[in-house]
Amino acid sequence: MHCPVCGQKYIGKIGRKKFFCSNCYSELVISKDKCSVFQIDENGGLVKICEKFLKDFLYPYSKIKEEY
Image (cartoon, rainbow, N blue to C red; front, top):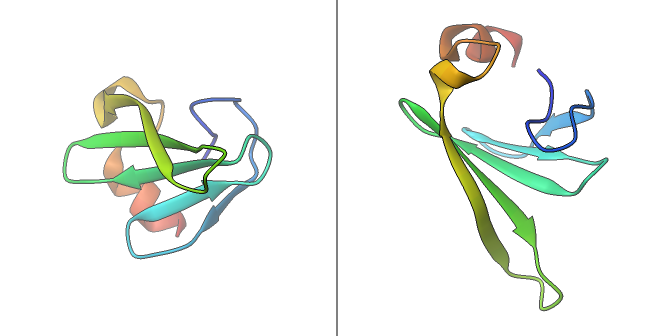
């Protein structure tokens, strides 16, 4: 799986439906049909920067679940 923000393949799993990119420090939360992308602000909180439907990504949801 590639990061939707930077395009690199540095994605790690941090929860059941949460992933983290160690290249651009983005957190991805995958729900039923969409992926929300968060960035860490200077206070340590998460700020939502975008939300996309999974069909817009290269990999369908079933394939993402198979990889992790």
